[in-house]
Image (cartoon, rainbow, N blue to C red; front, side, top):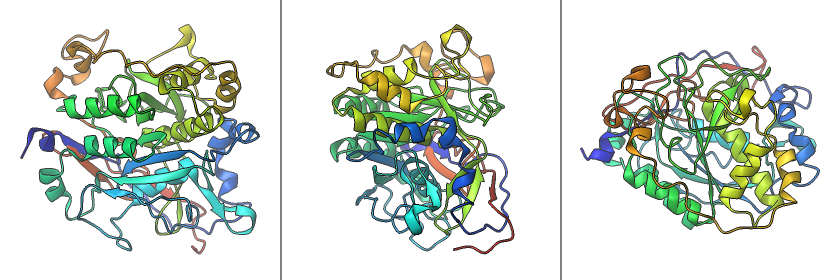
Length: 405
């Protein structure tokens, strides 16, 4: 197995899965439970834009383009795995569909009043399959033969019109460490003008290990908070945290046409990718660096001192970022701070070797977007480390006992 192949271990799910029969979406049901949209002042941002003209690449397990909340919005994508579960099978596109719904769901039914509304309901989704669900029988094969899928997927997305690249995946296992090919792919995407967003990790209760791709320079790394603005216990606390977003009791869509509540930094990253889509739609000429700066400068619920490893600069506020963007003049994208020094790829600033259970650069990995809390009904694995990071998701169906669509 190649070095990168051994290191692409990512679980898109986190501890324990609980499911209950789901209920149908209806105008006063599912959307009424999407508390995160109000917390982020999304409807205020919609007075300016809903994301028209923006394409968000979702690098994940695939996206169900036939889901009623995404129908007509999903572009032809790329499958960099080439095998594994197919449409209609349980182990297909669950996590990716959930993330796409958070980013750009437009609902369905009369006036779109049923189902999921995403942050940027008029943005386009570009699916890039770079991982398989943990329940997929072919995941071991993918682990040994598709180790470079993440780096290749980032480059492919950047070359095919992605304005935003969502990476609700990662590895924070004991073997997690940076990959030169992935870092180079991220820098390539930034130079091409794509904003790269990743989940910070779900290792907050497991040593706060560094997670990649969140720790790569230039990436907007997102931690998770609950509806009260408190850091989710599972959310990783590290120097690379940029902003935070909802990641607890989040409503998600599934290819089975049911709706669930899930938790994890995967969801938080998706909320920020949707927010970036709104800002880009309002200010298409701003560089990724400028947009990142807008998000940090306009964040709400700013932690004491202006920033913390728990919350980054605070809770993302797309409406405020759009308004602040009116005052900026477009600038060319400047290189992200040169590849971080090796010590930053170990335990990070302020930590000595061995802190939080890390043991240096060769002991790090890729936690899957919801790492610690995947938002799908099955665990997902992206192999990037010496072994797969297993983190079953915690989900529960909404409105138990009712019929499903």
